Length: 150
Image 1 (cartoon, rainbow, N blue to C red):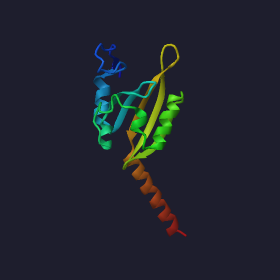
Image 2: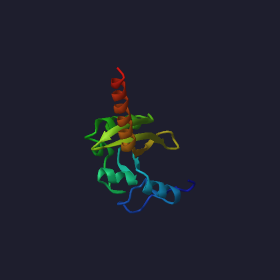
Image 3: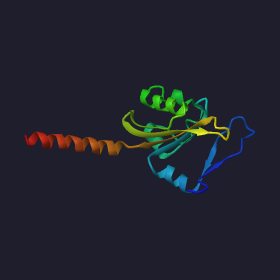
Image 4: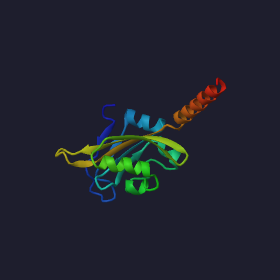
């Protein structure tokens, strides 16, 4: 995926995020076709990128969250808020959380600048609802089989 992410130079227009990226090639294909969300946030929690087909399961569109506070976006989801807070504290975190009627697996990691200071966080969320439903069905069948053999 070489060259899939290219930093754009800071814009002279105040309306554009200063820490934005352009997506192209293979990464754009992945984000458009898999149930994932890729997002970046600045040290103060401002979302500078939110892309991916996974947004549609939450009723959102690519780029719709840009400019929003990640802390406001996850306000009603305490498990996600905890993961985000831990990432902003410098920890790489992973967790699977139910949001609305979908399950999402989160991977969030701090981004460091050349000086080693926190430059923000990058998060990837994958819709794993189908996997969770299959696991629940498997567990239900296993319990039923155990009861039948007693």
